[in-house]
Length: 254
Picture 1 (tube, rainbow, N blue to C red):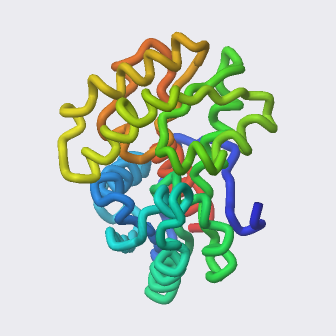
Picture 2 (cartoon, rainbow, N blue to C red):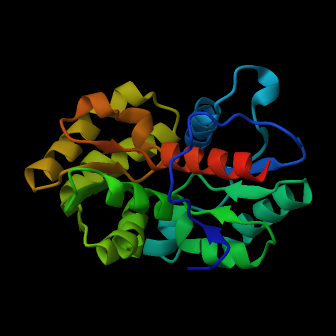
């Protein structure tokens, strides 16, 4: 792991409040897709222990939906998204961002190179999520992963979780296409989460039947259509975890 790709291993103290210097700025490298970026910003606002406008974080959002498809790059030799990711990261850095958040799981397959191109840290969403899963009690030994096929192929969650003794259960090929990728693409196309909820619930149920003790919404579109109330095991939202990690780091720095 690149040393500047940062992971926070402690929860945000509830008593913390933004204070002091207002020079620090969160940079959100988004657009992958737009609905997921908007959802992440809302989670960032909700994660901030503010009592008035002035206590919230300053945020720059670069939402670039023209970034080449990450899954296509990993699966079918599609265009490499790295140059566009680097351009967005540099734009945010040059605009004053103090650290970066990338609310796209599949983009993390390319983040090591992006991190080398900028001088500010990128908070690593998948690493943060792995630590959260590791800390769940009772202990999780098997977790189900709902993600893009690109994230599955790249083994992004597997590499972080299996070294911690946590097995990752993935959907069958047919379920991955019909019950996971189709809903993800539908949300990217502008459909409401409610329109695809039944498919995502079926996908999660299949993983639970296979032994999953928790479900990771490992694509930022998944929590747009699936919630904790929909399934009988813990639902882990990496975007929410990333939001808390960003807030914690920003408040400590301030």
